[in-house]
Length: 243
Image (cartoon, rainbow, N blue to C red; front, side):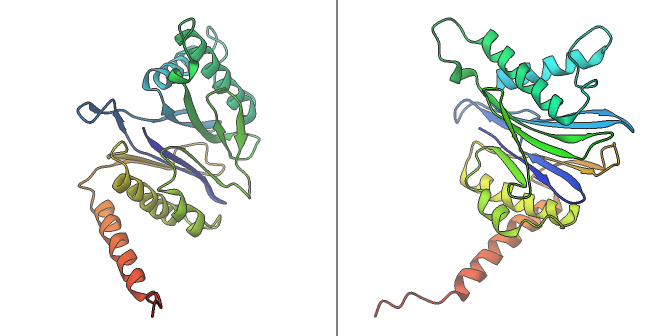
């Protein structure tokens, strides 16, 4: 299991993901779930992955290999004319990998993977997509300004309540940190370290990128401060009038 979030802001895009992959309580490993392709001054693409580890790695590896020598390998995410066409390419790659990984007579669900794709290609606006295991996708909008994949239920309430399109990258990072921390405390299949990335509108470069471990002072302050704030808010609520 995993937990990844992509958030659309007026200022740009923010991404955060955990790194835990497990096949049982005695088999836990760390794998990067955030991947990026950058052509400075022309495009930035960020891809978050959740699902079967072999499938997600195969999809990312295939996309990456086809981007190494664009003149020889097609299709390439470095040549797509728009973010929409990039999302179509990722969807087609998912279908290709799942079809090639599924033995005859076996359900494809065991090899499924889902992705969040975001970024900007020069000449268009920053865009954010969620791409399903079947390869189809939807785009973020004013009504649906963020996407989650993986273990989504524990971290969603804070996003729904506190998100504001006009917030700063610092505020958005705080919001995602609380969302990830809530999930970490509720599900052992999601774990540290976390990967965080900002993309600022029309910059065509990665604005900020950091891996956040358990010993990170800011993460520790958020984890403890959020717990204390919840306890304080709970204590201030009126008691149930049972008498």
